[in-house]
Length: 618
Ligand code: K7E
Ligand code: CUA
Image (cartoon, rainbow, N blue to C red; front, side, top):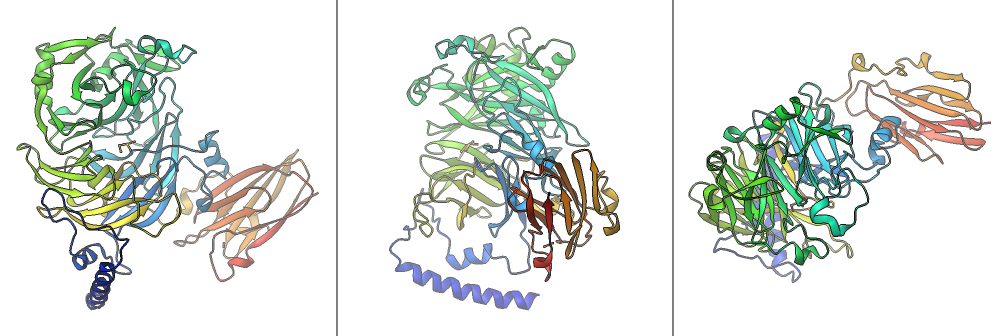
């Protein structure tokens, strides 16, 4: 293995050197840029060596990246930045048959798109535990992906009362709750009140979605009625701040119309600090009203649950440092990021160190709770953490990443991004114990850094080496629309299965023996129990009557890794994919008499092409 690698290395280095020579005379290549005096462009050979994962070798980390309005989650290997897999969540995906079989179709409901922003890995004691991945979606929904099989198992919502679920999922350190909040305030309960009444009659909502510790099952926990601000991002407290949620908000002007002007008036907006343990208790004591089937707490009636931390100006990200005492709020229209001190927040609450209130929610005195304003650069959005108290903040306007130190607040380095970074993700960089090593800038633009593919250019995501004092750009990858947040987890924390064990298959229509496959009729309902195994779909033909409701239940009886089969039925918009040991059903109406072929859509053996049959509709 070692010698194989060395020779592979030699080849890479030669190629890298050739590439370096070639690119020097390629005019379209953007010039390497410098910022803050730091040399950022890596030596190409060194970068190639750091990102090269030899054939057969495995990446060190998984990165789960938001697919934005594609509604998916994309899985990458780090450091290779190879796209390994796509997990369909809110959008049908024929490649895995998602959204075509009865179960996933029902889970998706009427909405066949979603706008995914923030994946959130389940945590135990503030560290990723590799069990589930929660992802938010703007249509008021939250999904749970089981990392045992990388499949979406539950979609909760659209949740009543809240509208435009952006500040989500952000689980608590022991995955008791996932966060949801409304970006768009509206009347609660929803009813037709004109926008002219926005400031008084519209409400924001912050919600805690309860998560079952054993099954991961999500349920409506409770909601809090908030002033009509736009709730933007969130994070759960940890360590000393465990039991609290923090959420940024903009448009505390309560403006409508052209928000780019009307909502940027105030010098400071707010971070809402929510004592969720106290909310839990208040709900248990019956202090909530039920609106739209959800327990809703009004902080005006129940004080002591929510406080507002002033934060300049139109803050976007809020990120709790690994020690849990520092809360970093990034004012996207500023040149600084603000660090609040949780201990000071507690003291200010105790001393009633307030400067006013918003709809009965106390506003804490800025000077009493802030530890620092760190001059990171223009347009700070999000902060991630590394080892040794290093913090990394994305700068949208500067199109760069700033590296700074928690505690001394010193900005030590800046790395330019190509171009206009949004989120960034460091290895385990939002947990209690960040891993350091790598960071990925999730950029919004990429113009000219890849072969032209027409007007719509893929976003660039850039891998940055953070092992040394100066950050070094290692690699550009081009990611599907649209990467918002991503999380990077150590590969050995995830333990996916390779087949569904036969003894776990409790599906009522499962058949494990070709002898038991066949067709049964009950009135106008026809059930076809089908077995898929190399290289036959049994029964190979079946007959139904026009107008019958037909359910085909396919069991893939393979117990061999990677032996998937598909069931595609032509002219019926049906394609399901069945993993080894799995049973899936698809139900449809036999529309028009005639003969229709079905076949295995997943290449499975040398005789894959022979894996076919006919449905005859009489
Ligand atoms: Cu793109 Cu988290 Cu939706 Cu910031 S958000 S960039
Ligand atoms: Cu089974 Cu192809």
